[in-house]
Amino acid sequence: MRVLLRTEVTEALGDKALEAVTVVDHRTGEHRDLAVRALFVFTARTLTPSGCPARSP
Image 1 (tube, rainbow, N blue to C red):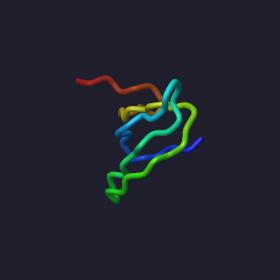
Image 2: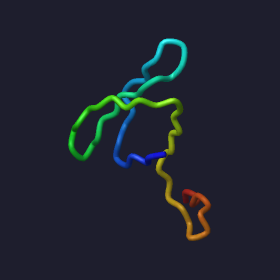
Image 3: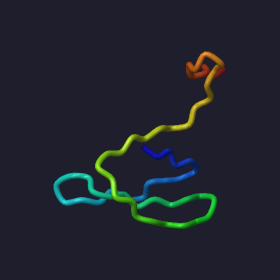
């Protein structure tokens, strides 16, 4: 498993199942296709020291 920070999935590719994704690296502007069989999307949140999401005021 690889974690890609500051990276956005711009396209999911595959006929009947996910085969690849196109991503853009927001630091470099580079676009590339990555062969994948699964995708986990993590959205940024502020975490407390205990690891729980912080509540918005």
